[in-house]
Length: 93
Image (cartoon, rainbow, N blue to C red):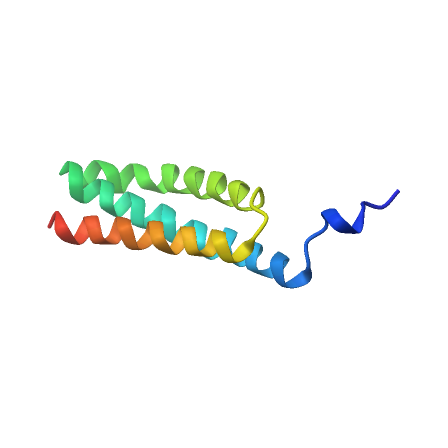
């Protein structure tokens, strides 16, 4: 039995969510790890462990993307978080 049409996303929203999950999730995860390395001062340790923790965080962020109803809002959230993390990285140098 097919799903009701009112619960399905349009094709443009699907494309926005998929691109936000893949690209936006990676940008958020990578910028968070850069900010964490810059703020704590343990650059070597964080960069070594980020190969595992970045992948886990990226997967979690990708799953959370599809819980949102609007792809534009999630892209705005991910770009805002990325810019915030990069700004904190720049300010702590």
